[in-house]
Length: 377
Image 1 (tube, rainbow, N blue to C red):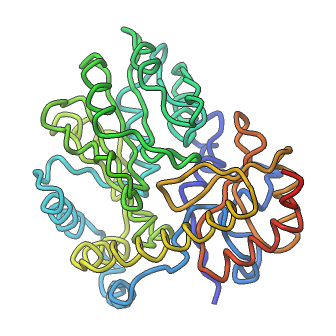
Image 2 (image 1 turned 135 degrees about the vertical axis):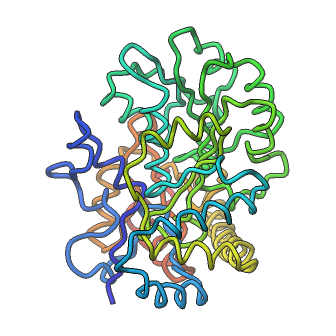
């Protein structure tokens, strides 16, 4: 059975010059840029959108079946229930939680709330582009700060880039596409340097995969820095990319500012029902983390054995140096019915591959050995 899912990655492809165009796929875009190709998605190995190949848990699937009972009703009551459940999960007040149609919707709300004509958005280069693309729609100015030599956020330069015109600073942690992290100590020092008038948006879509002991969620800084907004999603470790549910945790004032930019009933009853079941299941996160990170470790050990360069990742994807323009490599994989990540212009020779099942990663590695022989890198 085909599983037609729409990921955060679609959002990047979809953004255009206007808010309406932002929801329309780019004409002529490669199928390797989309979550699924036309036709039966099961014909392809899908390693391009950082989705969870294991999908919903058994209990979540049962909740999906039950969600039909509320499918004819608007989800207002469920929204309140999910906000309360998320608030309990993070030990905050429900008024500090804002729901979105995926976390990309939260990023859009943040741009609309904190940017405008003449305002500046500061972000790393490369990073997940949604914030900067929507900033362009709002006629805000994008200030891109290159990553450090070890592919990490250059927080001192990002802090120095904040001026009286800065409305928003975006930190993707772990960062997409590099998989590198900002440590808890680094984030604390950064927040202390950023003017309190600047909103700091920390995107923790890949939070659950992190194993680096130096990392800490930005939520630990929320009480001391009310200008902080933390975005999370159910798309990744919970396997809910197609259900489109994300959320923000913020001060009550910033949560209200985000909510004013939200569409009416911007989440659906099925996603909300599954989210409640997933939050109540203590086994989902550790089980998926163990399986997916274990598969990632296997892949990286094979890359090391073959002498290939890659960026150590704290997420469910890995960037691999293919020592040439990545676009022909992406196309060669697509011809083998394997979808891999898109090109990132500032890292043109690096291929991003999502972590799939062990069998899928074996297929990817077999393809890599043919398309980019180890002796050629």
